[in-house]
Length: 287
Image (cartoon, rainbow, N blue to C red):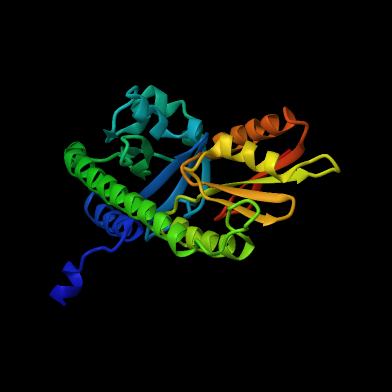
């Protein structure tokens, strides 16, 4: 029994679940969430709301600009308040028109580079007692510990990608020196598993080359190497198709890189299209 209670968490998602359940049982708030931010989206990774007080599920996506947390992150609103509707920015926010929020607590979760990954936050329909705001130091501590867990997992994933590169080095296309279709398929499957564990989907850029009689593969490869260097994993999955793993890019930046490589190829007289998609969800943008 004691061993089960004290067994260490093995990854960020498991640690998140333990923290959510603990805060939900000790603070009095009905709903606690781990969220992440991507571009203008605020995405619920996990939640604890055993009584289903709020219609919020894991995977739900809310506009970042609609949330309380965006004001908290800016420092224009408090990290905890027993009476959320007394805070003008909270009372005026779009989410207050959709959900009944009497009390709020929220703190940032930062990644290994000190960048915002998401938030640890909780809400309740009822105004809380005067003692409620005394929970803030504990919530901040738990968020810092989650950030540490996140950082270690991100570092582990970086090492795993290097290991993947080495273990699959024979599965390359001799013409381009990029992963061939089989090697790329294995690598992407491993990346998808990592993304699912962390709840932070990796993004991929697909480049479709419109070959004609004058197009040289060497020119295509040269343009891709100049654009992406050796920092990113690249697959040559069909004669006219390449994919680039951009696991550290938000979707808006992936699309920007797509435009950039398209322009670089066009400067050499090579026509192309690009597609940006997410390994965990579905294709989201193309041109």
